[in-house]
Image (tube, rainbow over all chains, first blue to last red; front, top):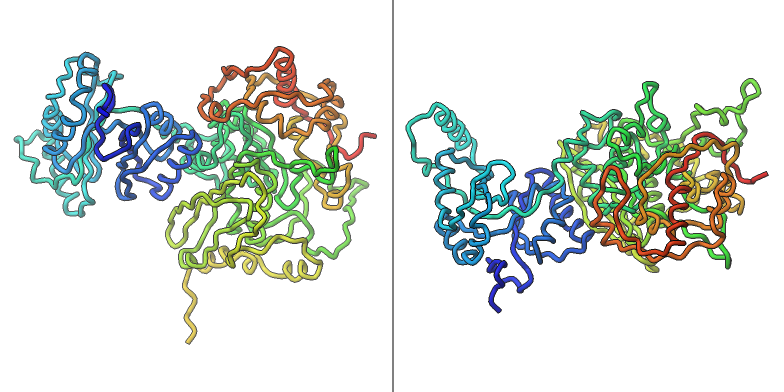
Length: 505
Length: 129
């Protein structure tokens, strides 16, 4: 079948409804880019096929069914900049021109009279302004007669060049060249620059949400803490968790509310809790989690924030049975997202007495039971990181609605990478793992989907943590006797400076 | 605290877990505040299946709102529409919920009770004595 009047002839052999697009990614958080895109495609129920993708390049080719699908897919993306219709590509400009002519000549009349603009993007390379102009003019055969408008043109066409990574020597040479250019040196032949290894000619289709990173920039946020997740990764996490209008999200370690704000931005009514009530109550000057919601004018999506830890969470319908003796459903949230405490800045703690054998007697001072006071700080006991992961997985399994998502951030010492066991739960399907590398340690964003129905088979994997069970008093005592370091291997390695232990001879 | 939240929580004391009194908790000396929030039928349609209706009727009554004894049946609004719906910072969600007049009235009431009413001061307890 011949291509219809407004569709492109495919560059590669795509089945008829699919058309080729180019995504311009930001060259940051590379391992998060594809999972974010895949997550959004699933959220919007968009058919796609990734045709070309490399973590080394900001340009990726993707097949989609329509411009509408392309616009929708990119609209919420944080790690991409924009999506374009791919008109032609090649390793040289001759190839690009051939490609553009053979694929799009039947489309040129559509843009004959509209206002337009040509843009130019290079990755890892540079062109002088005068040479860019020359390259743009080499496309004049498309015959656009409309006015050229630098601001708000009807159509934006962009030439994109992707260069192989260049050496420092090259970069210095480019820099020197740029200075010459400013001094209006006699025109030089810039072809002595390395040539791009891939060139694309594209028409702009839709913009991403990347600009909102600035809106939620921590530097401009009313209330933040020492461990606030930056705006960019908070928003990416919200995308991974499929939050959206009409949905409920919950962060059990809400802190100053980085995730809560990101979830609310995308339309979800957001709940949060923290063992440390200061974040929720806020400071004397009125800075609080709530004031962050007010700052961003998203109060209509502020659910509730409360003081609690995961082992003593009030979320649930305990002890209650609905008519017919059936247990009441506790499936409440569409998304649970969290960055649990690593136990480095603050030791890992949960509510409870350090010595579980001590009888529970309320402390009474001046005839007032202290735990009834508003500023009562309840006793806390040390908690192990593994146990905490277990509790999170179990909580997600019971509190997520079918197909709800769990996003959890976890730290790892790099040398431990091989030992890093991905937490698993029979009711949670692992969707993706994204890695953010720091010097000597890294953290991972794990995304899970709650299966529609409970799975019978426990996960068969020896790496899996044992099922959380109520501990006997003796084992609890033995565990509590251990130090914070023993309970948390990551904390220990952090303070040892991630040194490799001396090998035993 | 919103009534929505009250419908999700029980007494967190471990020993109370098995007690049938731990859900729902009852408000005492509640001081209410209300503020206008954009009407969101999509949210309400998603919330409805997750609510424990008898508990909500009980808590609402305690705070002076009357809800029908049986949970209203409403067509589920589409999730695709949810994903595609734009998030505006104000204004009601512009979306055809496709419900009758009577159900629309119930939805508006639910919106008021769940989203617009907040208990700003008060206690929660396991029995309503």
